[in-house]
Image 1 (spheres, rainbow, N blue to C red):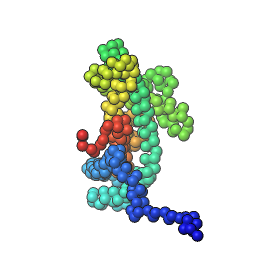
Image 2: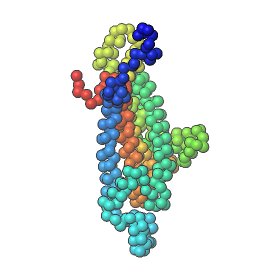
Image 3: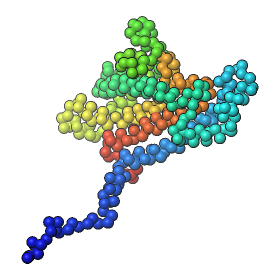
Image 4: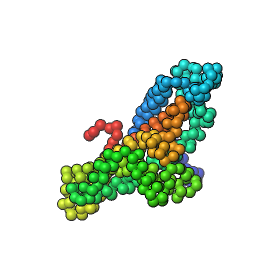
Length: 356
């Protein structure tokens, strides 16, 4: 019988994979991710964020420790006896040395335990869970309103520099940058809450009770913050667009090809001017989370700004520390997202690589 007839169906045998080939295939996605500019930027920024957040907590703890007075006295009142103050200080570990108290807080924070409030013994995470959504919604609405109005205003102003729309836009921007947001907030309250009576002056309605009531309560404080942002974004974006329209060669090339003026303005100049606007938005977003104290006080919003002010007045160190950690994380996170968006919007950007 021929050799062909005696072969089994599985003949010839498959060549076994070479040693090390399978791990190499599994490691290929990791190697590709390692070559990605966005991944390198993310890793670098996260590593840089660790000492930044730690330094913010340590400095805050030092400043709270240097404040005059005693946290136990602030909690018990001026009429408390020395025995009551000593007992409360011992129960809250306020009589421990500064460094011991900080290391205890840091060790607990690394495990996710931010402690309890000294004022009412409520978990700090619960306090953050109530305050953070309010401030985050306020800031997001303010940025959305500012960008929705600033981008078209800057484009129209840059279409004809020195024209009527440009002069009006620049005058409004100068006015907005020179007026504090709390003054503008008072004007909004006088017009829409006292005069027209179409919007509430104070109070907060959670989003779970309805989108309409929630937006009615948030529109005035968000507008008060958004007006100054709108003025700044309009000036920056308008100046960048005008500079590109007058100096860049690709604008001249597009015009020579017969591309319409509005198309050149929007598809070419505006697209490349987004980087300057993106930088400002990224830098301001994280910082604005904790800088809304006055607006939240004026409109009675239970956000992080108002909560931080109350915690400082009460010498409530765990609450202050938690707020500082959250704000530092927002600042670092906003800068990280900005850097990643650079690589997404412009593929020519290669972070961490030497220029060719």
